[in-house]
Image 1: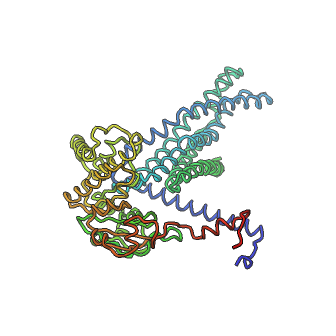
Image 2: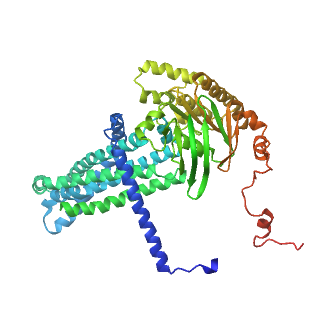
Image 3: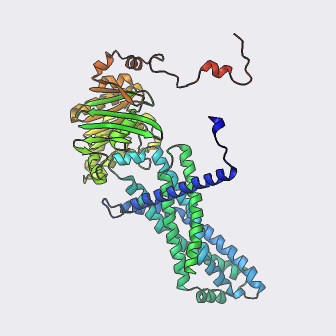
Length: 266
Length: 269
């Protein structure tokens, strides 16, 4: 038989592989959306999962506080340094407050915040759900007449969607504050100018834009990370692969959606 | 009564179970036995509704488990229990909360009543006093006994046991076998036990189903299985390596494999 097989050209092989990957991606997107929506549809179904929303909000939200404070502080500090260096060339150091605030609120807060939450909370969601599948805990829930989509997936999706905007707000405040410290205390920018420009230049429109991004990113992280865990192959390597994949897909997804949202809210 | 009709399951192209009809009698212990890979766990998962069959139906009375709404399925499951092979305890909770879990979820009972019930269930498996331990602190055998207590927490009508005695020391295995037998009798509980432990299976079951390569090769009361003149059945019961069921799963000749490898010296015969 082997001599009868037709040797495919390299281009055909390439497009064949590309097509298969694209179809597989599309299939996963559909499957993930269905699974997530299926879980979300149970939000008001009895029994009410209020306690589990709060528990997850605590585990995922409060658990990410420290990392958000640290990254927020250093982002604000480096922005002040870089901004001062650039603005000083035009003699407009007084715009530093507006520059730092604008970049953080509109862009860096939601995106960097989302990255940190993917690394801290998203990966743990995927790994935890994956391990629950490997050890048959989700089957055990099924057999105890508890719907794992309602008990495991739903609270995590809701909790991350709520936690990300709250954490991003904290990131913004810390970032702007640490930018003030570096700009005013270390580099000698006029404190009045820093605050006045910040307040004058940043509008509610900027803040809404950042807030919408944070909510959308939170929802995406919840959907992607729960899906990857729930559909991971029930082996040790399967869970490891799913965790890596969840982090990669969520991070890339955040960047792509960030561009799309920015083009709408500009 | 639970009835499987033309049940089959494919994983990809591999048939784990070829179309099978099966009757589970109410209030009796049915043992599903067979070697590893014979499809017995698959059959159990299909009967419990954890997986959808590739073809066929599972009937609980006159309800088709594959066609009913989720809500009804969860209602039915409140009167079911399952003991998983690797226990499947919820590892975020301690022993007490694991055993009390079904009671907390589905009953409005007062916590003191639940405490009493949990103590009773744990006493049965000899683990009263271990309420505060976490699943990760338990040995495999202890975890299995806690899982048994949890499966029994709601006094279910139907219980599925996936390898209840594997991984247990002989004493615990004996205790679990006796417990299955006693509770089944006392509560008129329908038990479906999947096991490859011939001794335990034949001693506790009222009805035995023997599977090989995804199909039923023998069924009937334990005595008729013991006296079966089917060579495959006798081989399985006695654990002989040679017989109609091959021990080796390799499909190529061992001698050819060794002698045809590059670099090996071949003797002319």
